Image 1 (cartoon, chains in turn yellow, blue):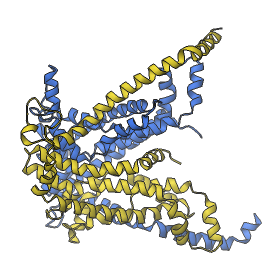
Image 2 (spheres, rainbow over the protein chains, first blue to last red):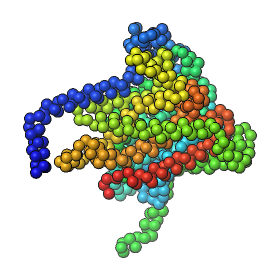
Image 3 (cartoon, chains in turn orange, blue):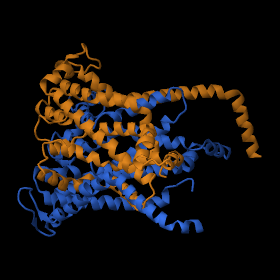
Length: 293
Length: 306
């Protein structure tokens, strides 16, 4: 009895009331979404607004929201007060080397544990998962000592060589993707007598563009943002990355907030651009990461 | 299977070939794992029983480092601060991630735009975020305290007040909840519509739906985020380093986190042995936490499908 009245109620709603409540609901949703969205974006906007102020305006009381006269000059001054250009080149070099390393090594390993049937592949997969939770601090000190004994401190080798061994996270991401590629493709080539390396390189690798794009972006931002690695290995300020440069600038010119903001803004822009380029891939990676198969 | 029997020799040979092939393809990772993980891992255990400053040979001192650590006030300070971030900040962040995900799951026009906006702060590099917040939270000049004062609200000294440093970090972290929210969102969108419809017919309200459909369906993702969050909490470094401007731990060492203390002992004081012992204690803590979470997860994580 009760059930039937309720179902009558709903049919009633769909006929008359629904369009109106639906509009009201979506207006409410837009209001909530934009208010919280404004809060989320506010610090980000503040970074760019502060970067455009004069030294006087930035300390002005009460503070102005928008700069009176945007000081585009601040961005140029950042490059003049510290060797920001050199730091950018250094950081880009490190990013490129790491990306190349990851794009070679991670797919090879991922292919091995997903398409080649061999004893031990489950062991390797287990190890890969386990290293994802191993804190880097545990191996950091001996690794530093090894590199120091090789005379690699103050070179880029310690900050790039690791990428050529692949990373657990990337291998896992690629494995999830390769598992979804049908075996028929490689089987046909195998019957035609193609070697495994040819199958991998000519058939599988070209299909990996979406996850490889994601890995490129993740690797770029990982290296671009890395602070602890360069801090440990790079003492010579000609080799510094942007993160070290910004930190050095902060400890020397702590009060010049407009320049610090300008430097931070320039440093942030490539990450934002890259995000817009790779948006779709990142979202997909996010969902495939959590679906264990 | 007679066919298989007849070709036994061949399959054996083939599986042999497959083994070397598989090993060959996996060799970049395996070599790296041996050189940069296994060997250093064991070495660091050895170093943890020595006194070692890099320049002279390591000197075996048995358990002395570990004994000293258990009498080290800074160790406890670092552990307490880190636990605060792990067990208070991480749950807060997870709840925020979920709420944002639910918000971004509303079906309205232009939702893709909102998703982009909410995700944007997570793209900003940690060092830029830290410098920015140092300015926003500046007790005198910062925009936040200016705002709070104009509203007649209390204006704490944030990063200069030991009681407010960690809450400041939590607030900063909340702005990055777009990342975790997107992972939740992907899972939310995987929940079949029929579940909600069936629940509605049974007279379920929004709370029932959250409690009995959404939370169980999201529980594997929650497990993933919880473990990653806890491990991340034990590695907080850059934020503390920048926000304290290199002064170890900042006001009253309230931002002396485990990774910061470990870095300081290893690379500033060159106590490599002592720092290795700290690293091993960290390793044991992380393993224990992971085991405990996985064990309890059997009770609260719901795997659909099989």
